Image 1: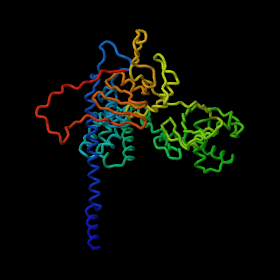
Image 2: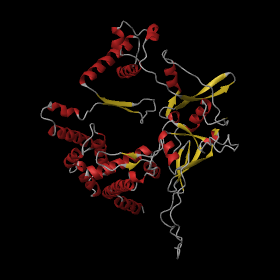
Image 3: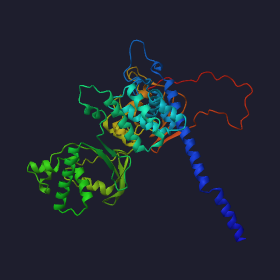
Image 4: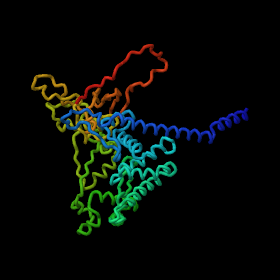
Length: 486
């Protein structure tokens, strides 16, 4: 009996053995690549349906903030009517910025990198690798001409699917440099060609925050700047140790870099006769001001305020630890402004159209971000929109105001999505405080609340499998598009 069970187990293992699993994984990856290639093609077709000619404006004048043509790829690619980007993004469940990047990559590949485009659709190059090349050729500085892009395409298309991402990045950069050198003016310095692709950058990976509240950064700077930075960090780290710090060298260097962001460098301070003693800290010049909006939950126990261990930082919508906030506030150069608690359950209103600060703060804290589906722009930098348009003539004419300045009729919208709502058939309504239901020009519906975006009953493309087909279905006619609203 035991032998039979063992044999059955071995048979099952053979059925799902290493070879079969690897084949299945490879098949799944191939299907994923094919779907990504098809998505690129469909994104390009979506752009084809929305050329600049599709923008309906008056013949003799234009309205401020209305739709305009958008160059989203390199020179020589078709322009696109900008508002079409948002609906594609919502269908894909992503931001308008990501949708714009997808369409831009598709047009760049189809029109300026045709060899690479063909390799993608032949299944020899994954779409994500081709998009990495397109991202470079779109944003190269100075802008690549069609001839330069064609040269890059001819050099990298055949090997893009056979080399790693880092090697591909180097190959694209080198190819652009070689083209610049080959077409440079003989009367100029040949070394100038290397300046056309400037590798210098400073990147802060603020989308990947460690639970300890740290972020990674990487940079490529001039050699002289790098040596100066190294010496400044070493000098400041040694100063911190001399002042009694027992932290590791790496931690002291990291703190020194933060000091550079807030004050002059340690070398400049010492050259001007300043020291880093605590009694001189008030005299340190401030290079810039950084304003952070921190929210910490608190409860009252008798006369004692008890703070929660975690909170939220508006900037980047990040988790905030209480001990971090205490550390920031402990710096004598930090200015702390404590604002009264706003009860978000209390409705607020104001006469007229203008939105006072107390109502603006209420909307900022309630909505947190732009309330358009999948948009994540912080509400503090957004417009405050009247969900139902404010009628500026209602009071003078003795009519009820359809769009009052009331928290139940206000929402945070970033400038792009505010324009989109004003000048297109996109419309929305507030179903509860901070809960919004959006409808796209093609009938797609989305609910946006504090937890994010949910797609609601998307239009069905196929009839249900169990439903009997109609013998003579009536003609529904063209879809009804709602008129634009403010």
